[in-house]
Image (cartoon, rainbow over all chains, first blue to last red; front, side, top):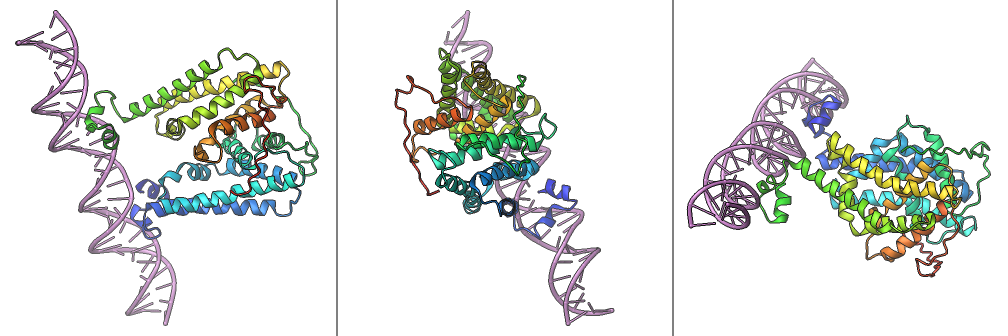
Length: 185
Length: 185
DNA sequence: GAATTAATCGAACGATCGTTTTATTAACCC
DNA sequence: GGGTTAATAAAACGATCGTTCGATTAATTC
């Protein structure tokens, strides 16, 4: 708390005027993050109807959002264990709501026979896992920009759900297929 | 330290006979875990030559190992930040070695024209992310056993790397395609 | 502009932290 | 079986933790 207060330029006691304790402060931060995430996706996705495009938009959104707000996401993922049972349940529920929006896309795409998916629940988790992993390694000064990474993940995602290659107006028609075979790790 | 000592049934001071401090204790645990992981994979994979089968074996191994040793893996992933720079570098290097073994499989499969991959580095990370995410949600009393989950992930993985469906002697010829469309989340 | 409330400070509280000290018991060696 | 080393215990150390207290300053209200 003293460290946080320092960074804000205030005494640690001042915090307790706004939050009853450390737990509540953390919880507020995490809930605010989740709400922002959900809102941002709903805004981004509004108007995109086709399941395939919606799916592509989701991956694009998820990756860029996670890359832009590394700290929020990191705390959101790592500090779940520091929440008490009640607070954790709230955050987990919000996360579930977010992940559900992906699942619904998969459902719709399946109904529209645009996707070929064996197990929707698993596919949802696979895609969330695949795209969230980004946060562990992505640095903006790497060989690829966020947008490039996102676009490559969209392609991988489409393959994963068994969609035909997307003919894109949204991505500007550049159906990139650059072969960047880099062996160094 | 007192809590750990309690669980071992000993006084906290006794620990300091074996480890100079808490940092070293954590580091030893994490390094031991990584070494076990790498060794286990090398044992499992020895003798499997075909890139496609090797790839399937990797996913199968990764998932079952992670499901069996949830605690080790959880500490390995979550406590990296608690290591000092030097120790962290060692663990990260070991993790890199492990992930490299997947990358080599992808390289080989690409050379043998068994895979279609745009960006090997990204594909490696996508697969690692996708399969490691398991740990966040898998519980052994879920609707699927570890083996079933692993097999489904193998199928998703094969799709991701653009491999033709695997004609399996190793999986016992059961080319399962059960359609478990479950809508509840 | 006096009264009230909000916001902050400096200092302290008790609890807990990683670690050390000192002493005692157990195991091993020639 | 006496001497040495290994292993543990009990107690304490100083540092840091989250939080509270009492006092002071800033802002707002009527």
